[in-house]
Image (tube, rainbow, N blue to C red; front, top):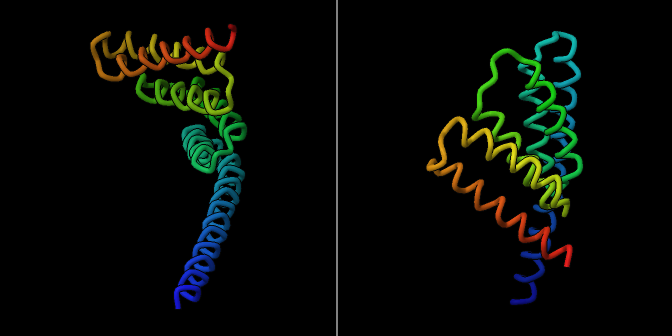
Length: 150
């Protein structure tokens, strides 16, 4: 009885994992099609949001190189828009820093975290929680860079 229960559990878990991978693949395809369609309209704001959403899907799936690619496209496009706000830029910098950290590129992780810190400092002040968290992240990255150079 225990064997049957264990086999059923394993099979259910396996099919669930495959379904999840299939869902992720379908989500990527849906977003890529949507980006393609949106290009025809020339709506930069919408394309930016779709790039960011696709980058997020790649990040959640552990595909950090692809996530970086789409976060960079989103950032490049965002910096050309008129309605820029610090919160969005800080989030993009943080997301890029996170992906580079996961890839193991401490230099680029530092670069984007530093940009986020600078902007957060300017926008929210040194005592804001976001700035403190980013300062802590900078210290961690510096430690990793020092450790890697030894």
